View 1 (cartoon, helix red, strand yellow):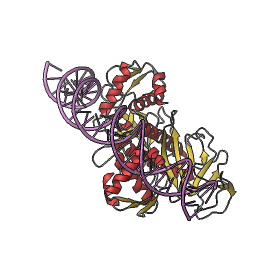
View 2 (view 1 turned 90 degrees about the horizontal axis):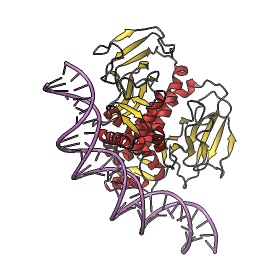
View 3 (view 1 turned 180 degrees about the horizontal axis):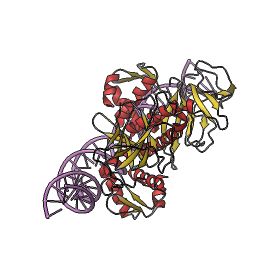
View 4 (view 1 turned 30 degrees about the vertical axis):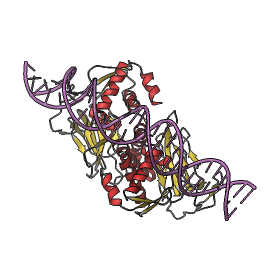
Length: 223
Length: 223
DNA sequence: CGACTTCTTGAACATTTTCAATGAGAGTGG
DNA sequence: CCACTCTCATTGAAAATGTTCAAGAAGTCG
């Protein structure tokens, strides 16, 4: 739910380097795949889940926390193509190799489904892949054709919707993450937050808690 | 192969409004799906293949020509999320409804695979969906973090690669299409083309034919 | 409390867009 | 076949938007 702050909350005991716990119980989420066995990976902030170029041997489902999927340019510029939150599945690849990096944004638990060699998980994976595709394409519209304020508005509304349309949003990610997701600098992101605050569209309780005072106003922006 | 110019070539007799021809032969492309029966839709430039909001009842494969997938903002701003060329499959949707528009860029033939109700095409669709996902995410990096020159360079190299690494590229799409794909205005696209020409990176034979004189130089730009 | 990181704000700068005008190419009709 | 017209592309100058650089404020952690 993107509700776990990087620093302030510790919803589960997580070791410094991310330990792996065997866990074959269904847990609170219905098991999505037939693939066996699966494990739960507990991650501290910025823990790498997989790296670009590595072999894709598993699928991943967020139990709690948040994950960023990103790619780098040679000079270090980063584009986060997606954040994944509780319940969402990620890690599927076209040819068995990861084209992106995946890292925990905050303290997170990731259910790992090891892929049997030659497994046909198409039935299980397809809906998640199609959802990711739609999200990526919609995000293209935001980044390609909307200005800074519209991008931030769309981001906040998307987060709110994924949290169950609550008025109060806990940002799991830093301004840097948001900037790299929206194709903006952290300064621009910060300025837009400030402008929204001055306009009375949002209230900021610290940097990571956003209260949507006028969601309609934000919605009107992203048309 | 993106080789069919909007106006100059007519590779097949195509009626003004796009007629449907029954065609159950495999054709030169291997049939990708078990779904039956299928047809070939011949399209003139800007012919709508499907519209946002419509029910998704088919999958589509480009036989020749090119297709743009796009979305609109309320004020008319357009973002093209993908061009599809010969052999590529598009039209899969997460929930049975189209989230995007699809139109022919130039004279094109589209093989239509009607989906049986409740069909399980996951085995067939998944690779294409994953490819589309990777492309969309990579495009996010281009649009989110690269400047105008880098975007155009990446675009030209992508086209060249999809045409079989030929030095000469026939652009099926207008500057407007390119701009809406790269998140730029047509003026900026045009200026970058001119700059590349002045630098000796490309040669322009008319507006729609590009010869890559120094592909390495372009490659070096997009890191 | 103090050091560190993250966030905010300001000012100068760069890039891209907007507005406007001109130029080139393709199709039409005389 | 040529002139006309239309669309598409190019180019220039001004304006807007976002970035960069720099400093200071706020929040977090030991």
